[in-house]
Length: 83
Image (cartoon, rainbow, N blue to C red; front, side, top):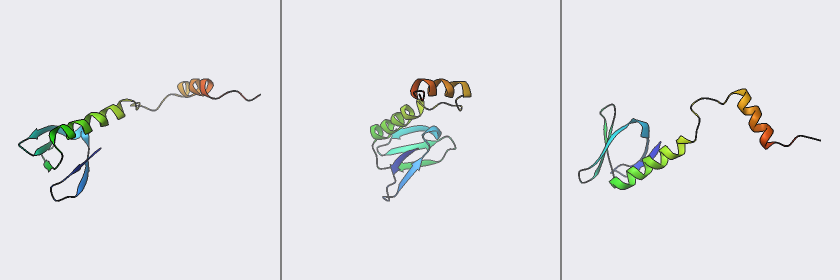
């Protein structure tokens, strides 16, 4: 989710995965895949930076939960054995 500001001053979070396009006409117009549009105060570069930052952040999250063997391996590497 990215936070943007509507022209009435209210802030809204939108799902960056649902953004189809962002245009500067001259204001920033965000079009979602369902056809809805949102005019925001942020300039085009700012909106794009927010999308890139969001995508970088989620790129490190696994799509599926780790397997038990993976968890065991990480625990062995990170947690010292009790003596």
